[in-house]
Amino acid sequence: MGSELTYRGHDAQVAEDGGAYSPKPEKRLLWLSRPVRYLLREQRLLFVFVGMALASVFFVFAPSSNSPATADSYLSTDLARSSYVPAVHGGYRTALERGFAGGKVPLGLKRKGLRIVVTGGAGFVGSHLVDRLIERGDSVIVVDNFFTGRKENVMHHFGNPNFELIRHDVVEPLLLEVDQIYHLACPASPVHYKFNPVKTIKTNVVGTLNMLGLAKRVGARFLLTSTSEVYGDPLQHPQVETYWGNVNPIGVRSCYDEGKRTAETLTMDYHRGAQVEVRIARIFNTYGPRMCIDDGRVVSNFVAQALRKEPLTVYGDGKQTRSFQYVSDLVEGLMKLMEGEHVGPFNLGNPGEFTMLELAKVVQDTIDPNAKIEFRENTADDPHKRKPDITQAKELLNWEPKIPLREGLPLMVTDFSKRIFGDQ
Ligand SMILES: NC(=O)c1ccc[n+]([C@@H]2O[C@H](COP(=O)([O-])OP(=O)(O)OC[C@H]3O[C@@H](n4cnc5c(N)ncnc54)[C@H](O)[C@@H]3O)[C@@H](O)[C@H]2O)c1
Image (cartoon, rainbow, N blue to C red; front, side, top):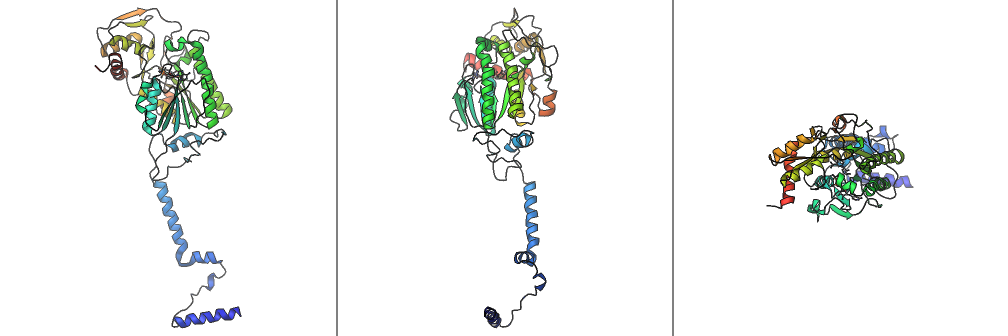
């Protein structure tokens, strides 16, 4: 009965078309299932392949974001390649989970900024780093207790929705949802770190522990700003990262020197034991605008003294050497280290070596040729020589400082004279 009805239907169609309809001779494909037959008909399959090929060519050659610190560079460098998988963390999303999962940033989508904590971000180096991160499009949270830092250093970001400032002491725990942690909080000049040595060592040890704990908990990458002081009064010159140093563990500078050495130990133990992504920078003497004016560091001392027409105080015979790096070079190095795939430690400093007397001469030439030099008794444990070997940073981070002392110093002098004498 059913077949009869079907048959009549065909008849009816033939009649309507005036007898022109003739079914296609497809009997050869009858053994194939219906969807496959559909695909094979009228070269549909061919068009599907051509479409797929065009799409692949498009995505392979489409431009990706070239920003030096794109989220994908962040991932491809470490999260993707590292032998460690980010630690399991309690409910917070890393950059990976927030949509930067490898490959290129899809066309038409702008790189999504990272959320970054800078501890000590209201200080000298920290505030310059914050400027660069904000400029790059990241969201920055500064955590600072204002021991040596100043609100004025970051005030120009107030009102920017990508900027937050938290008054907090890193010796107390803190919970924030972030992708990266630049840990700078620690007084850096002898005047300040000797002011309360117990607090200094606590900042270095407990503060670093707290920030490493945070990094572990939220799966953030952690960068420690260590120091050339870990080499102490070095017996090897220039200092290579493999040198273990010659440090007095019980001296007046030990709260800082040994504090930073312990901070390095903690950082490496969290890396090996808790799979935290870490980076270590060993910073050599750095100078530039926003340094504390009377902090006892030799460059800021000489510049402030020359501007105030006071004699330049040289401790000891003035033959001890230091290397001076301009702050923008350091910030560049720190960012390259954070974005790169190597843990370190890396020396970040300018290998140009000056005796204190040579530095005094550069200051005289820049500010006041008549500035007098006054010799004072040297302080305890003052290293005789300091010069970084930066071969490793050159090779692995493609970084080296660009600004020589005679170019950087005038930039600092402009800032210091404004702060000492006002705008006049
Ligand atoms: N500038 C250099 O030449 C140099 C050399 C070697 C290492 N470093 C390291 O770089 C980092 C920054 O140095 P800087 O020259 O900008 O010094 P800085 O003193 O200007 O900045 C340190 C910042 O940390 C803050 N801070 C200190 N203790 C804190 C605490 N317990 N909790 C929260 N915030 C705290 C200070 O208020 C300040 O804003 C330091 O860790 C320092 O050891 C600097």
